[in-house]
Image 1 (cartoon, rainbow, N blue to C red):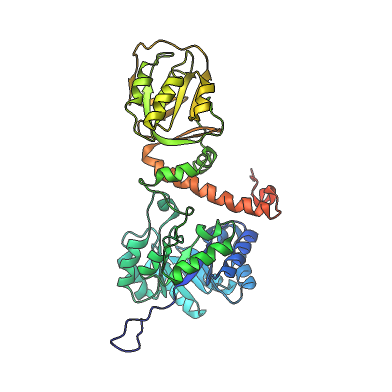
Image 2 (tube, rainbow, N blue to C red; image 1 turned 45 degrees about the vertical axis):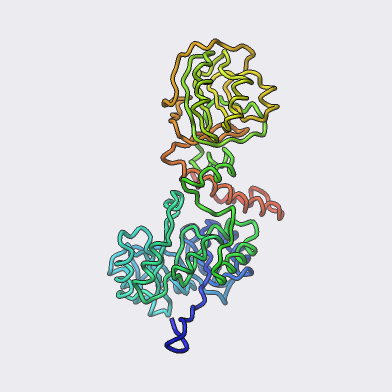
Amino acid sequence: MTSTDENSAPERRPVLLQVALDFVDLPRALAVAGEAVAGGADWLEVGTPLIKSEGLNAVREVRRTFPDHVVVADMKTMDAGRVEVEYAAKAGADVIGVLGAASDATIEECAEAARTYGRRLVVDMIEVDDPIERARRAEVLGADMIGIHTAIDRQMRGEGPFETLAAVVHAVDIPVAVAGGINSATAAAAVTAGASVVIVGGAITKAGDATAATTELRRAVDECRVIETALYRRADDASIREALQRVSTANVSDGWHRRPPLPGIVARVPGSHVCGPAVTVRTAPGDWAKPVEAIDRCRPGDVLVIDASGVPPAVWGELATHSCRTRGVAGVVVHGAIRDTPEIRQMGFPAFSSCVTPAAGEPKGYGETEVPLVIGGTRVEPGDWVVGDDDGVMVLPRVRAVELANRAMDVLERENRLREEIERGATLGEVAYLQKWESAR
C-alpha cells in the first residue's frame, strides 16, 4: 500500500476481477469469456477441468482470442513443476498455479521456471492444513501470489474462504487472490478482507447473460458493496428451505448422482411443490389414528411422512388435510392410500400417495410416531428433508441436506445457462456436446 504522506489514509489499489472458466468444452468457455470481458473482467482463468479436457490448447486459444487480457492457467501442479510451468508459459499463460500442498522442491522449481519465462506463480492453498504458515513458506520459496480457495465440495457444505483470506493477507507481503463461491453479495467481503484478485466462477459462468453478471460483479468489487442475488449462493442450516423451495426433484436427483425418488409415490395435487423436515409416522393400512395424532406434533413447515405399507384402506382424507392447513403443515407423503382427492386439490394442499381409494379404515391406534421408516428401500428419519413435486418425492438425509440442497441449486443454475443458449438458437444436442461425451465403452 502507498500513501501521499504519512498522515493520509493508505490508497487502496484496484482489485482485479478474475473469471474462472471451469468448463470441459472449449467453445462454451470462449463464448462465456467473451461475455465476461465485455462486462469488465480483468483476468481469464483457464480452469483445471478445461485444461484436463482440452489440454494446453485451451490456454493457447484463450490467449489468441483475448491477447490483451491476463491469462491464468490453473494447473494445480503437484509434481514436475518445471515442465508444467514451462509448457503453460509457452502456451500463453501469464499466471500459472501450483498447489500449496506440493513439496517445497516443486514450488521452488515452479517459481524458478516462472521467472525464466517472465511469468507469475500463484500458490493455491486449497486443502492445506495450515494455510497461514504454508503461505509464508511459499512466499520465501518464490511465489508471486497466494491463492485462498475453498474447494467446491466444501462449498456445497456451506464453507467459505473469507476468514482464512484475512489471516493470510496479514501474514504475507505478496498479493492474495480468493475463490470459493463468490457472488455479487459476497464480493465486497473479499475486498474488505484484503484480496487483490477476486475470482468468480459460477456467478458468471452459469449466468444466462454473463456480460450482465460480470458487470454486476465489477460494480460489487469496485464499489465494495453488497448486491443481493437469489442465485449462486450457498445454503446453510438457516437458509436450506429457501434453496429447496427453488429447486425441483429432478434438480435434486441430478445433483445426487441420479438418485431415484421414493418408488410409487405420486403427486395427487398437480403443480404442487413441497419441502420441509419430515415428521414420521408408522401405521397399519387403514389405521388413521396415529397419522391424525401426528398432526399435533408438527410445526409450521413440516412434512408428514406416513408409512401404511403402501396399500389401502385410506389413512388420510379431507379433514386431516384441513387440520394440517390450520397448523401450517407444508404437505403429506403417504406410503399407502388417501381419499377425498377432489377436496384436497381444491385446497391446493401438497399430497402424495401410493394409491387412492374412497374407503377409509378405522382409528385403532396401532403404530408410532417420530420413528425411522423404510419406504421402498429408502430410509426416512425424523428431521430428514423432503422435497416433492409432480415428478415424485425425494428424501434428503438430515446430515447431508445442506450439501444436497446446494448441489441441486448448482444443477438449476447450470441449466439456466444451457436454457439461454438454446433460446439463442442452439439445440440441446449441441449445448450438451453429446457426441463428444458419449461413453467410449
